[in-house]
Length: 366
Ligand SMILES: NC(=O)c1ccc[n+]([C@@H]2O[C@H](COP(=O)([O-])OP(=O)(O)OC[C@H]3O[C@@H](n4cnc5c(N)ncnc54)[C@H](O)[C@@H]3O)[C@@H](O)[C@H]2O)c1
Ligand SMILES: [Zn+2]
Image (tube, rainbow, N blue to C red; front, side, top):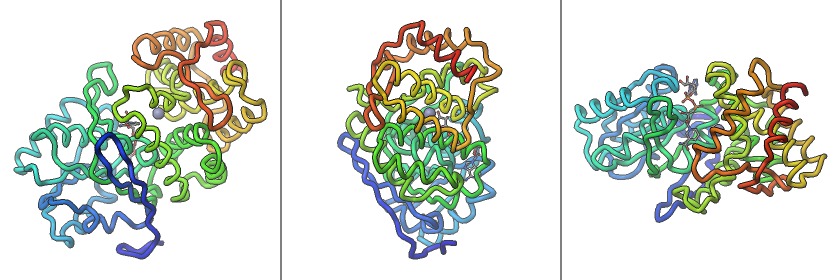
């Protein structure tokens, strides 16, 4: 248990992206201290969350803001990816306008990646930009979505089609909030944690392996290592121009195809990425010189966090076709990300069609 306002350690990672620098604070109980942490000039702080997070954490955040002398208000959105639309965004702008939000006020995004992306996009565009504080409450958002400054909403079939880069002023991560996260969401978040572990190697991978034993309660030091890793990659390519960010696609080429082949109703993003990471390890052994023992180590880690062992309920042809489409559409991500060894990714690897078919067959039959 950690007391609000308590003395538990706070880990800090400074993210440098272009000319911007901001801190990610990680520590149990930080949610109760948000009022004092928000900083900046904001008199009004508008907390944006969804209907699932509101009953769990909104009250605590609002009363913390009041204690710190801020004038808080809240906007509660419908939950889920299906709400990540222009229609919800319009609702958000309406409320910000009605609340009289000005350039000195702040938007606090309290929730998973959906709320972070939507509130972030609204904050980036409302009055050409108001202060944004990201308070991620899912594992995926803590290690991935809240770090790096990408904000977006979906448009028609296009995921994240309308978006921009907008760095928050602060990110506050309270691992205690993960205690209420549904198990499937925890597992999904672990796919990105495992991805970071394989890309970073070394102590980050070791922390990932020891953390896999109790997935719902990740060690704050693991969150710190993941944030530090993503921050370093993002720092080299803040606006996704140089290609340095491409390595973050490890497992995602095959993963996206599997996700889409299940018409977004079968495998969750994280489960599909878990299978994509298995495919990347298999291909890395054949094409990038990954040592067989390291490939096994990766496969065991994916199993340890409860991600799927094999592909089911999806036609191999659909996955193959969708991989080809993904390669055509996603600019700047030509080729696969593979591993020469753990901690040594290579982007832009060509994978012959025959091997693509073989790896799908392997996923189906392993
Ligand atoms: N901006 C980026 O760089 C980036 C990176 C990766 C993913 N994303 C985006 O993130 C989104 C996925 O994020 P997500 O997986 O966090 O999904 P999400 O925001 O939909 O959250 C998952 C579910 O958990 C609930 N929830 C959130 N916190 C909770 C808590 N502490 N306790 C109980 N329930 C809780 C939510 O209401 C939701 O139902 C996608 O839209 C994706 O495009 C963005
Ligand atoms: Zn992902």
